[in-house]
Image 1 (cartoon, rainbow, N blue to C red):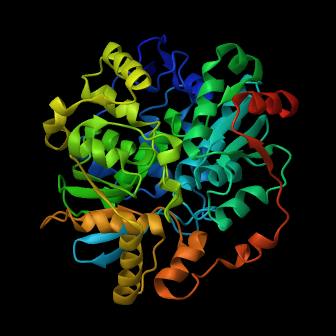
Image 2 (cartoon, helix red, strand yellow):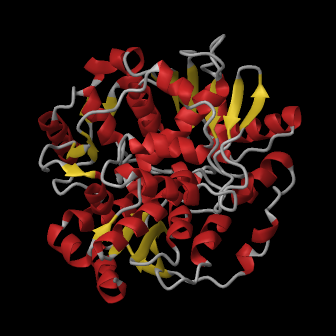
Length: 466
């Protein structure tokens, strides 16, 4: 299988090449030239597989330059019981509504599900090629720690993770900044997440610098992240159904559009997904698009700091892959739309609004601070289940789109322990913290704080990169 760019300026490349490249050389995002199809017989044959076995089957559809044996060894290591004591359990909330538990990994967030595989893949491919890689990423909360825990101590890889200074929860900061591994570098940027992401794209778009510094990416601009996330949509469908072809809907708290994009890909591959329910917080750029057809990212000054901080994003870096499908996979139209976005600050696809739901199954909604507090409080009182603020956003919007006979799975985002202040406000008590992490915020922290300037980050990479 070969991969192309959404903007048409890249020669087709195999998986291992795009794994190490991240952003395409033309500034676009990589996608398979064609998607594999899953028929009912294939899906039914997968029902008895464990998660590692299913991951090998699904990822094997996208990876043909790693042997089947090596891929199976990588998924066994990534999804081993010592990494995930439980893996993607279904947690019922009410008739027709359940959580898909994705936060049982080492950093208590759904990002672990893909990132643990990426850690295995990077180490395998770099060792095979005798190369090194400097991972440059940006995080609004959970990507950073998941990437760092997956790559800490890995041979041939250094991680440089940008985060918005003072805009993550104390637990999220401690998870990242307390790591003392020599190959992990945390950089807190005086700005918002979108500005951190802009720095990553600026440096990755400087092809000379990217080549000289051997830059790679773990953000969801890297297709391998999306491919690994497709697995849990298949897993969720298999666990929520009993018969071939039975539809399931998924509700997804979304800021950067990567998590729900994986569901879009799974649906296009043939997984019987009825609706993809996109939930935003007060930073509702994506909800506005699905409601109006106008994509209008906000400037940093208008990006709200909310109690679901991992979704405090106004420019969704994965959205381009979905727009590529909306415009019938025409790279010239994608390039023109992003040129208009740079020129006018927005673009208008309202003429295609009917296709959002009818063709692709998308619906969307907004959850506010008051909504998430009500949802956390109500769920805990009624069911004893405690959810984090982002998952609460997903539950709130999911309830607005329930349909008789169609199970709705809300993708759990993180465990409540990561957001103690909001949980305390909602239920009057602090959330439980896993025993191994109870001293996390007392551990020494190591972080470099700097102004929002790509040149400063480039200089830091020059001095500390592999």
